[in-house]
Image 1 (cartoon, rainbow, N blue to C red):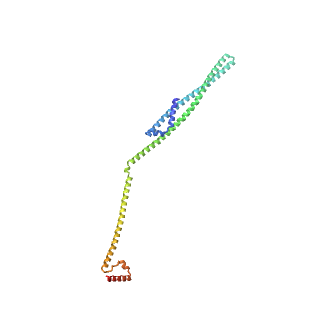
Image 2: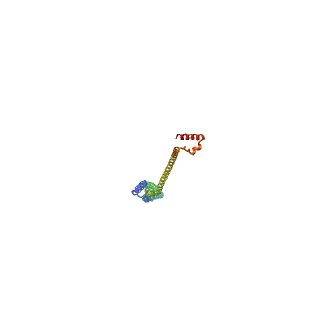
Image 3: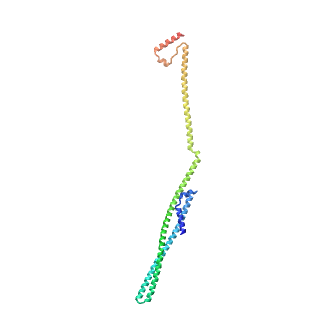
Length: 269
């Protein structure tokens, strides 16, 4: 029984084990899980042997009990037969032989009682052993279910571990080639082009402002030239000629006034 208890204590420990805690300390989760599956499978095989042995012991007890019951019944029948024969002989007046058969009946009854005691004493053990066997069968079925769950969990965790490893490799690869990332090159080229476009726009704005300034200078120069020309005309004794727009818009009275002004100015000279 000590050996059986040891086996089932190991089984209980494995059943209650936290797989994630074990994986935390494992360098290779897949190897750890595979080892757990193998260990659990071996423990189930040991448990099956222990359960089979217990069932075998129970069957032997049941056979012995059945044999005791059968023997008790046979001794009872022998006692009845001997007692019946004794009664017949006593009825016939053969008391001596009748007493012999009565003695045989007593011996048979004693053997019957002995077999009955054997059978009766075995019944509690059989009942207890039957209960143990049922619990062992239930526990064994539970272990097999746990093994199925463990295998399923193993496949899931191994898949997750491989996925995590693949993601880690991808992330490491991305970090190592980040300086060659084509998207970053495109961004740099785009920024360079934007700066060039901004520079061209600035040059265009600067050129436009410079051209406006030049036209303004030309206009100022034209006005200054007109002033000089009119001053020269005055000094030469002739009236300054009005611009085309002014002459075309002038009235006769204004022309006469201008002529008079010119004559007065000449006299004054």
